Structure formats: structure tokens, C-alpha cells
Amino acid sequence: MKVSVIYASTTGNTEAMANAICEAVKAAGAEVVFGTADSADKAAATSSDVILLGSPAMGDEVLEDSMEEFFGAIEASLSGKKVGVFGSYDWGDGQWLRDWEDRVKSVGAVSAAEPLMVHLTPEDADIAKCKEWAAAAVK
Ligand SMILES: Cc1cc2nc3c(=O)[nH]c(=O)nc-3n(C[C@H](O)[C@H](O)[C@H](O)COP(=O)(O)O)c2cc1C
Image (tube, rainbow, N blue to C red; front, side, top):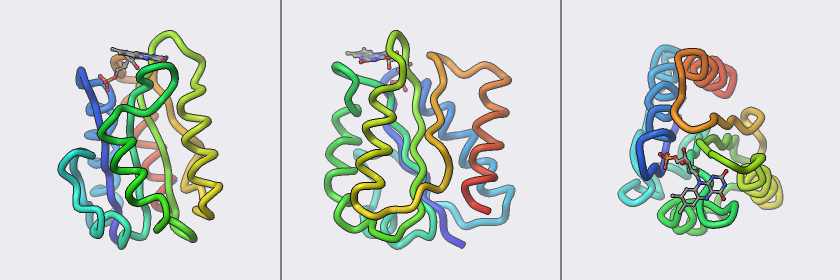
């Protein structure tokens, strides 16, 4: 199984989630395509069996710019794909992630796992949740 873990992160919080997710996906025996939204290979991502995408809440409950660009470019190719979204936030209530999940579903993708959000920097318990989330998403 091939799994893409592609993320954007401005201060390292979503990156820490992505690292834990990548580790768990590898531990599950999958081949991982890992990278940032500004440099990721779009074809490699859309040819994956499962696509796990991370972005912090930015602006006013929107995706970070490079992920908005990356996701916008692959959005039309996600029909029937298993997709999961995750990210870090601060003062909001997760609207950016709910909106993202709605976009994923509206293009006909299948939810690989419920959206996963972590408040600011992931603590040990959050890292454990990221690993559990990833393991469930690639089952
Ligand atoms: C310009 C800017 C806009 C932000 N907008 C939101 C927001 O709309 N909602 C929210 O909950 N947090 C918002 N945040 C907080 C970030 O999502 C939070 O700091 C997050 O941990 C950053 O993750 P990262 O290190 O992966 O970039 C914003 C932060 C910045 C700097």
C-alpha cells in the first residue's frame, strides 16, 4: 500500500503531527510519500491508496497558503480516494478542518478517518493520538 503524508506548517506544530503520522504509517508496513505541500509531487500523491493531508488553521479559518494551492491542484483527482485531514490550531473551534473535510467529501473522496486537530504544539498524548489516527486511516 502507498500512503502520502503531505503537510504545511509555519511553526512546526502540524509538522510534529505529520512526523508522528509518518512514523505510524511506516510501522504499519506501508510505503510512504512524505513531504511539504510546497514541494510535494502531486502525481505521486494522487496515485497513493491513502492521502493524509495536514494544514494549520490560518487566516480566518482557512488552509495555509501552500496547502490551499496543493489541495486545489489535486482536488479534482480525489474522487474515490481515501483521504484524511489533520492540523494544529489555536483560538478557533476547528472550522477550517470541518470545511476542509466537506471539500474532501464534495469531490467524492472517502474519509480515511475523522479529521484530527491538535491545539498548538502536540503534547505526548497528542502524538500518541496522531499515531493511532494514522494506524486507523491506513487499515
Ligand atoms: C496568521 C495566522 C492566522 C491564524 N488563524 C487561525 C485561525 O483562523 N484559527 C485558529 O484556530 N488558529 C489560527 N492560527 C493559529 C495557528 O493555527 C496555530 O498557531 C497553529 O499551531 C500553527 O501550526 P503550525 O506550526 O503547523 O503552522 C493562526 C495563526 C497565524 C500566525
